[in-house]
Length: 490
Image 1 (cartoon, helix red, strand yellow):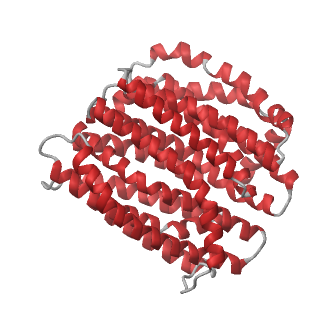
Image 2 (cartoon, one colour):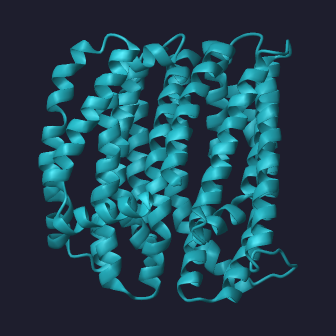
Image 3 (cartoon, rainbow, N blue to C red):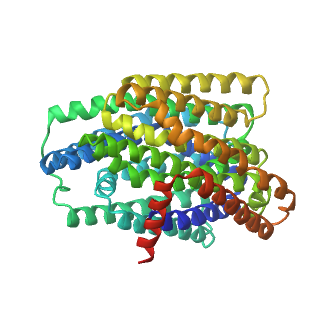
């Protein structure tokens, strides 16, 4: 179900981005990406709490403690209520001042920027309040409903874009307003489903001070790294805006859409294996835990490699057919971001294992330091006149350093045996990575139109898949894939 979801979401997301760019225009699309980035400065706390709730839910299920699960659910809502109030306070003071006084906004669009900012804050609050139910659905591994609702949400967003053409009202303001309505609808669907399916997912007036401290303590260190990530990404957006223009923000916004589509692919796999990795660790079934860790690392990397390499070598044709007007530097932004998140495919399983352990202080401090260095490097490079896509080069370098940090802390905290890990995971990847680029490199000269590009992407993907099957997988993994395919067929 998650892969069906992934295919549909990728297609809808990429097409939606094309239509939005065409309807809004480069400048308004750049404004939307820029304001969305400012809002993301607040939303990283949401992502932090999502990770914490997911971890606490999975541990409670692994120990079969429904009462604990219920208390985590209620306290999750309480924490999000408190954070929503904080978000309104900061957003309407410091955030609003920054938007009005520090951003490079095209003349005549100040009113639109104000309303886009206000509506985006309200939308973010509604998205925050769906978190406990969303996390519960994933923890219970109800991937069918999760897939259905995500597909429905994607088509609603696509419908919103087409509605923009029917009204003479300011299209940028109308877009974020309709997006808010869609978020409210999705929230209601999540709430109704969880209340009907899971007895422990009900809200009561209770306060567990001990659990609050435990969740906030765990979230605090995660907040450090996620906050650093968000500040770095949005800081880079602001630096690009100050040194170039909103058209460059639009180029990076397109690259972000490509990343979101590819990351959806990776997130599907992460969503599928996260509950089992955490539950096996909580149940102290370490042999099963590490076996799944090795398999998840290899499979997630291979699945993303089959997608990323063909995209990179056919990017000109894809961007030309996808976008009515391709902003300058879009290709360069996309290439380095795609490579960075290919590295992330190896990071995510290690991160799940460390989060299951719960001792995340050292890792999060290390990650935050790397992000700070990335932000400073971007600032000085842009000031020195380097091309704007240098920020994506630094993202690739940063993610590679993160991978080393995750390996170190997984060995130290979870007793990962690096020798076995390198033998089971890294060594099979090396020849695959070398072979994967040969055919795409020579075929890219024929990628002169969208039909040719799509055909070459299929050929490139098949080329990579063949080598993965013959030299990238061991006998046990091949047997696992065969049995999984047979189950799907039956």
